[in-house]
Each structure stands twice: as structure tokens, then as C-alpha cells.
Length: 532
Ligand code: N01
Image 1 (cartoon, rainbow, N blue to C red):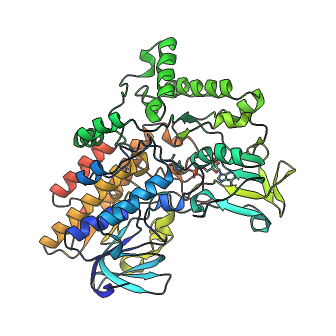
Image 2 (image 1 turned 90 degrees about the vertical axis):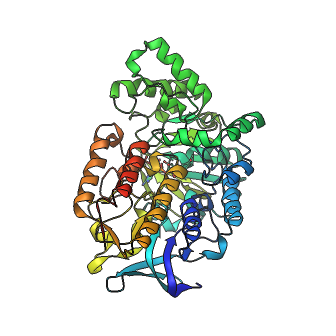
Image 3 (image 1 turned 30 degrees about the vertical axis):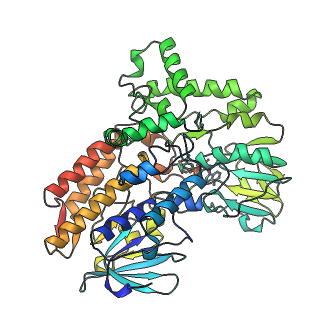
């Protein structure tokens, strides 16, 4: 790593957060280095190359807004961009803003220790290097620590194994193979139709059925692109006023489900189902607050599953019985239709739990399913996994793992008590995964860059959240979640997918009031922080 002794900031991760953070800090004159475990930029889009990987936010909105030239010159080709196109975009950004020269690739940050005397962080890497800086920014992503469950006999399998979040860049040839896929979350729901079309046989092990809405992906109409580009700044500004930071062009029906009779509700859901995408959940304003309202939308989707899947037994197995939207909803292209193929079998891994993995395949419910490949679509240790994967020690040598042993505690999702000068981009306690991630990233990066500029102007060496501000913030995040149906199911938002993980609702619901709060905190001289 060059210039390692005189750095102002070390940024961990070169995904969308790390790239923009580097651009902003360099522009403000801070000596900055990004350390990235992968061999290239793009973060989640670098690692998640499984077949069918595609963004569930429309491409004209899932893109940076910080440079008008960039958003005018880049040409998206589809309504929802696929992984290869998004990775090309990340590489384009890295080249266009000449970012690579300050990124060290193939290097994982192993530890970071705060030296209270020097008021600097000493960062160590798995390549044996150490480097110090005044500030560390964790741009490690919310869904980057792959979850590979500890199935008995997992490593005894003699065939090939893959995790959707660690897909080999050269791709996988499934032709003629008997493939098993464990999991039916967003990743599996995108991969299953494509693997089924290629493999000799596909066996899907489903523990919990999932709601999925058709994406209705299509090539972008050049006229539509011209229209958006002509008013891009307005679109971005309108999106900042949206609950999740996107979707301002579609109609969010600001009335409860009970304001329509059953026929009108059905027509509303049907129109949104036909349109495709998350618009479906904008049908009424109480779908995530009232169980009764939610059930009307949930039953509409179950009915579509029953209409689509020919075998009634399989259709019932695919029908979820929890609250729709409580887990992150999935968008698909022909997912339920795939179960009509003769080469696809659905195994109920809730009733007939996965017992073990053998050299030949997977045993569930007493039956051995012989396989050539197993795909683990088992998700991530979300929001805290990547942060706690680094041995971070703050004041008095306190470990972040220890400080968070009952769940993550932050102020604004940006900072945590005991760890001065450490910033988290889209950390737990911020809207992050409940928004268009790029909007949340830009808001955090801008706030952090402005904060470092202000500290530098005022000659301040440290910034650290106060205990009171953090306690109040954690209570606020929980209180907001408690007003909704979000905490009612086994979601990764709550950490329920990882055995032993403390169960805390991690993201904050609602982007606009949050962004306003961050602005106020800064305007009030970094209220809730101690400046040293
Ligand atoms: O992971 P998941 P994912 N035995 O956690 C099952 C984003 N994303 O990678 O539900 C058996 O959703 C687990 O079962 P259960 C998006 O935010 C976005 O699919 O815990 N099964 C579940 O079915 C998404 O929410 C996009 O009962 C086990 C599956 O594995 C997030 O990433 C695309 C198991 C994991 O589903 C994560 O999605 C892809 C076990 N021991 C991802 N452990 C788009 O933009 C886990 N499972 C479209």
C-alpha cells in the first residue's frame, strides 16, 4: 500500500459506498486509501454473479446522482439492470473518476485498533500490512458476509458446491447435471428459472415459502430514457421525499386498504401486478401496519400462485402464510412457472427438514436426494456480519463484538460509542436496506465527507457518539419498527436467519425524516457527538 503512513482516511470496501466515499474525500483534499478484499470494484455486484442476478430497483433510479454528466452519459439497457451491466457501470465509475489508483485490491482488512494517545486507527490486513489513519470508514455493505449453514456432513459432499453470494466469475455449467438448491429467498428465486432450464434436474429445498412479484423486466424504451434524463435532477429530488428513496414516478395510494371494497381492491392489486415490481406494495398505505389490510394483498399473491402452478399440492407448498413485505419481497421472471417443468422438484424442508449432507447429496425427511451440485442460496449474516468480521477495537481496547453482544447499537447508524473516528456507511440503525441502497449510500457519504471537512476546519481531532444519544437512537429505531408488522417474521432484518444472532430489528424505517435528522444534527454542531 502506498502512502501508508500519512493517511487521513482508510475506507474498507470498494462497492458503491467505497467508490463514492473515495471520490468525495479525495475531492476535499483528504489522503484516502480504499482496501478491498475482491479483485475488482462493485461490492455486492462483484460477488453475486449467480445466474439471473438482477437489481430489484429500476436502473434509471439505481444509479449515482452525484454527477449529472455521469447520469446523462451512462446508457442503461433494461428496466431492471442485470448483474453484468451493473458491474460494468461500477467499473465505468472507477475509471471515469480515476479511482483505482487509491484502491488496494485482493486485500482484506483483518483488524483495526484505535490508539488513544495518537488518536489514530491502526489497520492491519490479511496480507500482513499495517497502516494508520485518523479515520476509518466501513463501506463493507449490508449483505456481504455470506451465510453458509453448518449442515451436518456439509463438507463431505463429493460434487460441486456454490454459494450465490460467492459465485465463480467464470460461471458454472449445469448442463446435464442434477442440481440441488437450498433456500428460496431473492437470490434463489432469480436463479431457479435459469438453472432449471439448463440442468438435467433441479431439486429445490424450501424451508419458508416466499412472496414474489413479477418484475416484468424489459428493454428500456429510448423515449422513456430521454424523458427521464431531461428531468433527472427533479426525479432524484422527488425520490428523496419517498419513504424508501425511490419510486416517485409511480402512484403510491395514500389510503388504507379498507377504503376500497373487495372488487376495487382486487382491480388495484391486479393493475399493479401487471405493472410489475415493488409498486405492488404501494397499493395501500397500511399494508405494513394492519394485518387485515396485509392479508388482502397476501391472499391476492397466493391466488396468483395457485393460478400459475399446475400441481395443487406444489402450489399450496409455495404459498406463504406470513405477512407480505415483512421479509424483503422478491421480484422474479417466471419463478412460479418453473414448478410446472418436469425436471423440477420442490422439497418441503420445513416439514422434512434437511438432516444432513452426504457424499452423494442431501438427506431431507429420511430420503436421500442424489445430486451432482449443491447451490447454497442461504443468504447473508446481514448488516452486522461484515462489520464484526473485522477485529475492531476502540477506546480501552473494547471489541466491537463485545460492545454489540446484545445486538448492534449506533447513533444514526453512522457511529458507535467507544469507537471514535469510525464511521459506518448504511450501518444498522439507518434506513439502508429498506431504501434504494444508492440513495442511502450517497446521503451517508455526503454527511461523512461534510463532517470531516467541518472537523478539520475547526481543528477537531476526534468525533464520537455520546451514550445518551445512542441509547435514545436505539430506542427510536425500535419504537418505529414496533409500529409496523416488520418484526413479525423470521427475517434477516431481525437477524433471525443466523442461529444465535441477537434479535434486534436493525434498519430504521423511513428515509426522509432520517435524512432531515442527520442534517439537523450537523447544523446543530454535531449534536449527540463529543468532539475532541
Ligand atoms: O437470502 P435470504 P438471499 N436450512 O436470506 C434459506 C438482497 N438481494 O440471498 O426463510 C434451510 O433472503 C432461507 O430459509 P428461511 C435482498 O435484499 C436482492 O436470497 O430462513 N434453508 C431462505 O429461503 C434479499 O432479501 C436481490 O426459512 C435455509 C434462503 O435460505 C437479500 O439480498 C437479489 C437455511 C435465504 O434467503 C438476501 O437474499 C438477491 C437452513 N439452515 C438478493 N438457512 C435483488 O436486487 C437459510 N435458508 C433482486
